[in-house]
Amino acid sequence: VVVLAASSGGGLVAYADSQPDQPQGFKKKKVVVLGTGWAGTTFLRNLDSKLYDVQVISPRNYFAFTPLLPSVTCGTVEPRSVVEPIRRILEKKGGDFKFWEAECFKIDPANKKIHCRSNMGTNLDGNGEFLVDYDYLVVAVGARSNTFNTPGVTENCHFLKEVEDAQKIRRSVMDCFEKASLPYLNEEERKKNLHFVVVGGGPTGVEFAAELHDFVTEDLSKLYPSIQHLVKISLIEAADHILTMFDKRITNFAEDKFGRDGIDVKTGYKVVKVSKDAITMQNPATGDIAVPYGMAVWSTGIGTRPFVVDFMKQIGQANRRVLATDEWLRVRECDDVYAVGDCATINQRRVMEDISEIFRVADKDKSGTLTVKEIQDILEDIYVRYPQVKLYMKSKQLNGIADLIRTGKGDTEKESVELNIEEFKKALSLVDSQVKNLPATAQVAAQQGQYLATCFNKMQTAEQNPEGPIRIRGEGRHRFNPFRYRHLGQFAPLGGEQTAAQLPGDWVSIGHSSQWLWYSVYATKQISWRTRALVISDWGRRFIFGRDSSG
Ligand code: FAD
Ligand code: MG
Ligand code: MG
Ligand code: MG
Ligand code: MG
Image (cartoon, rainbow, N blue to C red):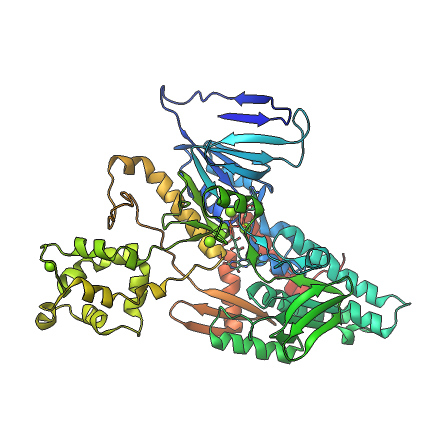
């Protein structure tokens, strides 16, 4: 390992350590992983640590189980219960790992180096900056909260992204209640302090609003009886509905339930300004309205981190909003850099770009036409390389020729039909409309981390036996199947021990039974037995004693 520490004076300090247990002449490749969130941690947990010299860099030295952060905001679950130190995770795996608590602020792909900064600033001139070189770089830095440049948001709103955010929210909720209880306030001021505003009707905003409502009705109303009737929770969403990524049935149920609970759901309103005392929102019918508030949580979406934007400029992705990778999670136009999780999106290759090549490969007898059977023989390979084709073949909007391809098997009459290239193009012309970006979820990030680790584990063997699914000219040979996402379902906790679950195949379940499913899934998904025990005991404590309201 060689780490170069750059001082701003231009001098470089080199630290080197030898690897005594290595066979002579064999040098492990250096893998540098940025980030210890869902993608980075899952990658590390699945990587065969004997094969690489691994360095992990992240400004926080722990993994956080983000799906439980909304529960931390109201003390249903304690902050300690949702985090696991990364050093403990690495130590359990054994092998060659190093961790540096620092932030990467620049990627230099031309020299295969990254620039890092520790916020502890302890090297010679105290700026805490150092350089790390890599053979392979795995970027798993997640995303930042997006304010869409709305004035006043950064200064006045809470975000809900990190454990610290959840802790701050919890303190702030309690402060609002204590402030509203002080003797010298008038009714108006009490109301203002007890107005909680959630901006953004996505899963996080909705879950937080539900959690806060439960906290208020189940715990705080007893402790603050004289002011509890002044509490108001508003949920502001710019679109026409909340939870738009879910099935319509779930959206409707959530809106109705919130209505019954007295949560004021304001859809079709865009927040345009936040000041210390008021939130200004806009609606074409009403114009601007400014409402006084006590505390606001901003949860409207995510954006790209500035140093990733800078990296994108360097590699010719300046016109994109999110870092693009190919289906093997390799950053486009950049050798040996991979990106996983919320910081990247997969740029799915279009069928139409490769249609002539696919035709050529499928036409085994070189007749210049394809029989239905010839197409069907290659269909499985096509599905692997272009998942949109499978989605299309399952959808109802098939055109005549595509329908023939789907149903033609075993039918002698249909099998004798031959398609020329134009007809083949026509059959697949609508296929690319099925391409969808994967959602920014822990589920996607974890699956990508796991997939990439599998590729890294097999990289050496694969180099000796290159083989892959369908080979398209100009793309080189692929040794692995592309990443394929398996959606296992999604939850939307709605408060009052009710959860909506949407499972694959449009299976929707709402109510108390899904709440129990939610408990069991999240208990199972815990990263260690320690956090599992802590989370379950937090839930038990809450059932018996209620939530803690000190803070
Ligand atoms: P993250 O998990 O955000 O990890 C990024 C890592 O990079 C962190 O360790 C960070 O410290 C580090 N980092 C940041 N900057 C740098 C830098 N400059 N250099 C080095 N390291 C850096 N998803 C679900 O599937 N189900 C849910 O129920 C769910 N609930 C959620 C609830 C909340 C409140 C939130 C905020 C998210 C939730 N998500 C959920 C989404 C999920 O958390 C994200 O999709 C997931 O965390 C993405 O993983 P990631 O590894 O890409 O990024
Ligand atoms: Mg990560
Ligand atoms: Mg995380
Ligand atoms: Mg992504
Ligand atoms: Mg033929």
